[in-house]
Image (cartoon, rainbow, N blue to C red; front, top):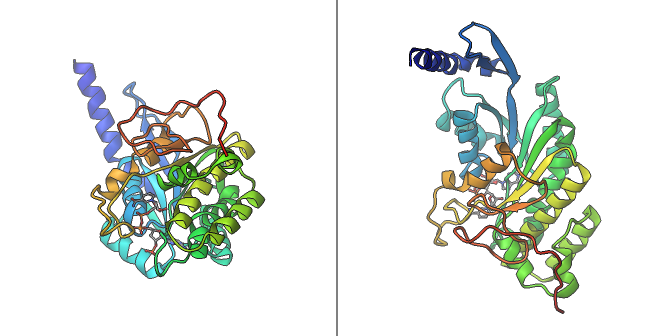
Length: 315
Ligand SMILES: NC(=O)c1ccc[n+]([C@@H]2O[C@H](COP(=O)([O-])OP(=O)(O)OC[C@H]3O[C@@H](n4cnc5c(N)ncnc54)[C@H](OP(=O)(O)O)[C@@H]3O)[C@@H](O)[C@H]2O)c1
């Protein structure tokens, strides 16, 4: 009993004394053999794009407060990003702004070299491709596909050199992805069940744009994110790459559309894919943290998806 109390006190001490270590770039772990030895583990540095509001901001706050991470808070507007740092974080929190507009090659390249200077010899533990837009009067199909699908590709192309060898990439998909695939038939559907090269993704983008304006561009953009995630898993077998649905979450994106869950509730699958041991890279995860299919919508509470042996799709 006495031993247990001493161990608990020691762990509490470690926890309280960890703030300065976080600022200096290491996480301090105390040994439980009552000696004052300390092991140092590298601090987990995570880039979250589009983190100045909504699900990205909720995740950034959780990563700092609950997971001992250092967060590069991606925001396309420096003004918005700085305001959020002031209003949503405490002085001394392990978070800093990275200005990045994922729809622009120049901005993503500049952000990657900015980060390079800040990282020095350090590496990122993970990249979270969260930035996204929905189709509406302001956001035409081409902008939606350029942000939601080409955005993660741009970010990975430019930031992969900063990722640690066994790092993680988590891409924000959506239940809209499987919804989109469910409407396709035959070979069209089959293509979306597999990894796609960047050229194949470009060909699909052109087809979706040709469908005209509307929600299909958003849904299609997210289906393609998952095909891209599968391609990443094949190309970088040492990394853990996942795409996730956050659920139907009330944010500026969905305001007035009937969503009621908080942004904090939208990070279950994100945090699972960032920190847990996953059976495989390249999978798509539902908002409840269970594997979900690519070709139909699985709702939370329904049984986890198990891959079928062979699938054929009627024309
Ligand atoms: N909410 C849901 O129910 C739901 C469901 C499925 C998937 N998702 C996905 O979850 C992600 C987060 O969405 P959310 O609901 O949190 O929406 P949100 O509140 O509208 O946040 C979107 C974030 O992305 C940023 N962003 C947009 N375009 C960008 C660009 N070109 N470069 C950099 N940042 C950009 C926004 O920045 P600004 O503030 O500058 O606009 C904002 O920070 C999105 O990928 C979305 O598609 C959401």
